[in-house]
Image 1 (cartoon, helix red, strand yellow):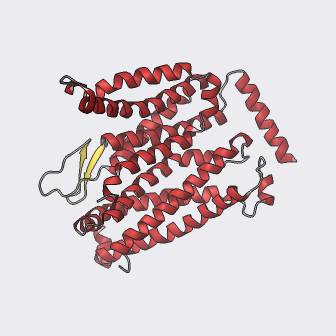
Image 2: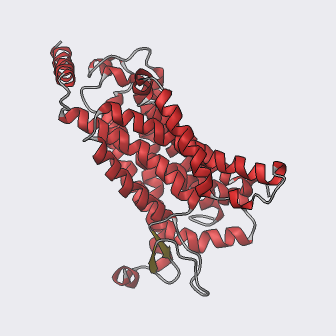
Image 3: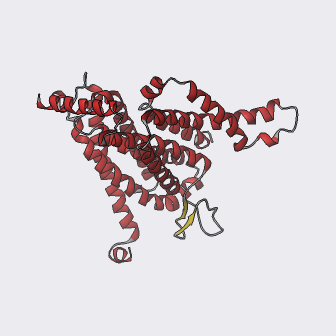
Length: 166
Length: 198
């Protein structure tokens, strides 16, 4: 870390990381939203790739992207959470921004739940898709989309309090 | 057409192996992934509520302590979140691994038992506290204990698990994958209410 901080200032480094966190969040948001829309709008789900030809979006192809984005995004967020705890949350408490604080606390929980469900989510989207798990696959996908949307919103509000451009 | 035949082949393979009681690698992976999801989300909620982190990190001084550590003066705010996640993940991995080795019927019954116990334990503690403050005509403070609350919770969970038909336990098993995280978020969200009503 000292080598990095000898090249750029510490606060600039964390701002760059926060910007990457934002970029990954937008990509993840796009992927989960498209997949959730696909599973919710499809009138019927068939086994295997058959559905992909008729679906507006090839829903199954998003699963790997979502897992590959969700895990590093959660890890990056966990790393930056250290700085949040010291330099964002304390002033938030001092300035009595309780709603923002509570919303961010809930973000920690909802992301933890999302991480816990990722192995099952990955299994449910493995090819060939199993016909018996259609409902579970649909609602687990929607649940993951909700976690990402919530995390994005709460993170954005926290950033507005103290982050890039605030 | 080829894919349909592939799926049929896979399903018939599954059917025949399940009929013989031999778990295939596909069913083992399914059991592992689903059990991990149910166990992790349940344990995370429990550990957060009981505040049982595997470790505590003090970011201001960069120190890591095993289990729960109350900050000393000058150490700054403690972080428990990592500790809850790591502990829940470690235990859930073990539970999921064990789940792949036991029979499906036992697994489904055990899942029902654990989920009902997780709901009944805090409920019976809350009921005991209401009894102590509103109803008791004697000094009932000894009842205000998680271990006393455990007795009706364990008995209740065992009774419900015993009377739930096997077919129902089997049918709802995958539903726990949604019920537990949503229920957990309701509990955790309720615990954060203090921030929203100030």
